[in-house]
Length: 361
Image 1 (tube, rainbow, N blue to C red):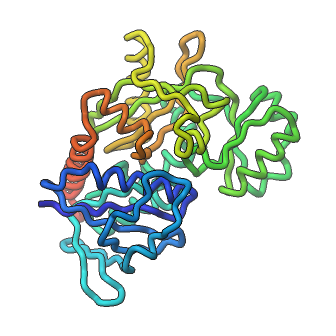
Image 2 (cartoon, rainbow, N blue to C red; image 1 turned 60 degrees about the horizontal axis):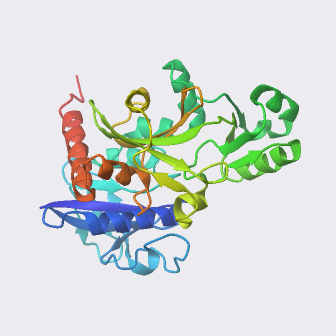
Image 3 (tube, rainbow, N blue to C red; image 1 turned 135 degrees about the vertical axis):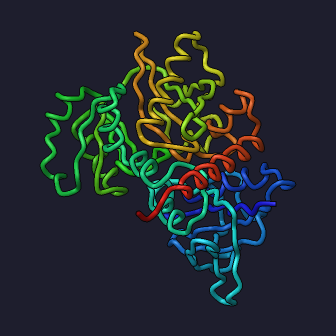
């Protein structure tokens, strides 16, 4: 029986969402095939082994406990043959066969955690360091979209030292009104605002810079918001299409995770077969253009004249009870436990492929 290290929590604004995702994965995983070892990362970055899972929240917003209160501290000991997680107090150790890092946002799906797991020589679920990093940085992501001729919304990006020099008139002249302002490196709609006026734009810029040193200001694409799940390594498959609607202008953090009535999720979306196939193809092209493997969810806009604009990719999408990624695959015929099994198999397959490469001349 393989030991799966289910890694959750983390230092980002999506800490609680990660814990909810972990609960759903822990409950759904086939315990006849896998022994689950729960590893929590505190908000300040410490790792803890959690013997029990009953403290994990079923939904974000009302969580009063903490990772620290439910675990014992761990240290990481990398090693090619026997990487270990060491109990700091007692010196005992844990070994795992695969890590499932359901850690969203900064220091979770931005390549930093993936780099550590690569150094530890442990297979892990999801895109590698490069795919994770470029999938998180929306500026770099869009540059790769443009190079790959994947249609995406027009945008401007600014670093924190350029903040005072932003010309609001030029922004609206270039991108129209309204615009969306978002941190370059964050997920789950955290820090995103919509702005129609210069005053709103100033407020939105200030808000976005609270979360990142680089921000994007993006044109608003008028169209249906659609999502597609991608699964696989070198030859990925795409799911049926889902639609998000009724969320007052954009799919906010509250609508995604806190309010089941905050948005209407329609699976499958009402689309003709030709449009479905174009969106599925665009999703796979996006996945490949960013060098992703394992899993991702691709979000697109479909305009009134049937143009497809790729909004972004999410390389470690949520696994809460209202999350699109597992719901899309469920509609496509892959149930939750089977989906988890496939993700673990893909992690092992990539690890074995990479391990077979020569490391020296």
